Length: 116
Image 1 (cartoon, rainbow, N blue to C red):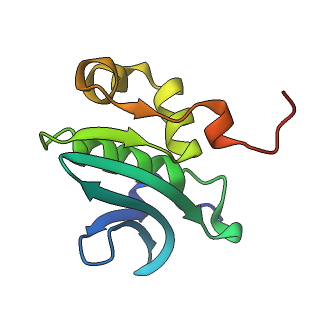
Image 2 (cartoon, rainbow, N blue to C red):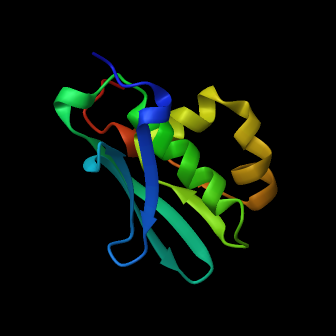
């Protein structure tokens, strides 16, 4: 049975520099970030294989982007999933894209094994 969106809780752990997705108090996904010199960079996401395709990575991306729009930091996105999420949700363009001088990973940066 798939969890409802409300069943996924997301929190930020500044000690580990992870956004964490939890279901029933169990961490089922993470989104790593780094902060350096006025830039916050989303670097890598992971969702437990048995929990994938349930909106958990999207919940992590949305939470992290909402969190980052509250700070003056420029946003860098190296995580391929988050880059795709921003591309698929143009409402984030002004918040983290053009107006904030964000770096968003290119296809090459996201998928080095694809054919060119």
